Image 1 (cartoon, rainbow, N blue to C red):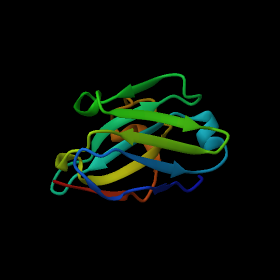
Image 2: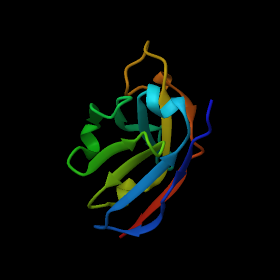
Image 3: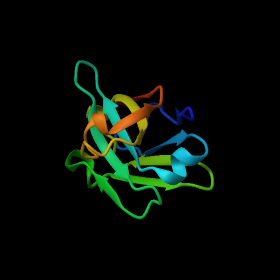
Image 4: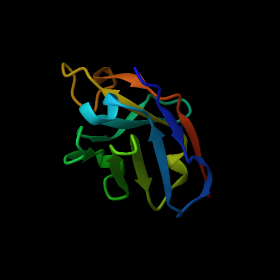
Length: 125
């Protein structure tokens, strides 16, 4: 399995936008759907978004539907998450992952078996 590495996080102001990236390699990106999750302090990991292998279909969680965009560039083996109008409640560690297990729905952690190390996003008010 190719390693996944998130980038682009950090400290941002409420109301700003951010784009975080997830870089990988090879067949993982071309052949599999991918997802974004996040985990806030003291909370369980939460589904954010999923995108199909070719990027033609995507789903965004209700909690961020109006503010989030997921995209992927298979030529660059990179997955993106754009989140606008950031709120302090968006503070979390954000993870990308590859979906291979279709016994679970795309919004279930069990559907994913290759995870990035995560990247911290802190939104200050």
